[in-house]
Length: 101
Image 1: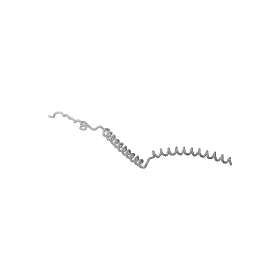
Image 2: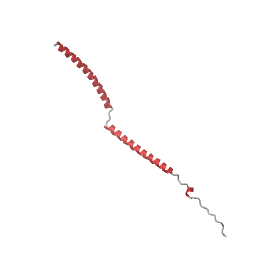
Image 3: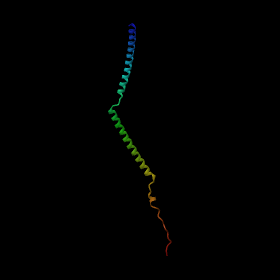
Image 4: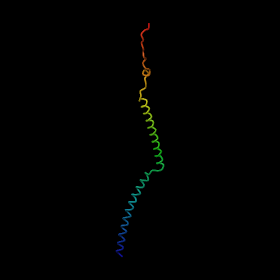
C-alpha cells in the first residue's frame, strides 16, 4: 500500500508539472491569438481596399490612354512635315519668244 502511495504521489507531481507547462503554453497561444485578432482584416477593410484598387486601376488605364493619344498625335503631326506655301505653288515657266515682224 505504501508503494501505491509513493507511486500516486509521483504521478500527481508529474501531473502538476504538466499542468504548469500546459498553462504556460496556453498563455502563449492566447497571446498570439489576441495579437492575430487585433491585426485581422474585416469585411469593411476588404471592401475599402477593393474600391481603392478599382480607383487606381481606372486612373492608371485612363492616364495610359491619354498618354498614348498624346504620343500618337505628336508622332502623326510630325511624321510628315507640313507643305510650305512656296512648295505648294511651283515656279512659273517663262517662255520667251522672238519678236515677230
